[in-house]
Image 1: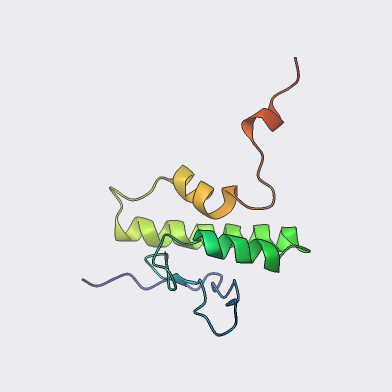
Image 2: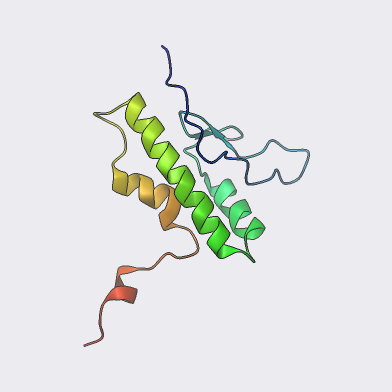
Length: 111
């Protein structure tokens, strides 16, 4: 099976490996699976490492995740346009857990 060639969007080079001698939890494109554990990227370990790495720069993390969300949506739709994850599922997977996440109760006006 020939996989589509990923576009030249943001390069997923974070999170850095921790400990440094362990494999990095980076995505395999265009499948968007974790190189280290095989789970859907960003896996739990990648999320934790990203939060730590960007603790002082939450806007940078939000921009990074948004760019990768865009790339993953493109890649995964081209791989499987009929049975792939929905845009909402991908948003929650890539961006919704990030630093600017809001619960539904946070946006509801008080009564």
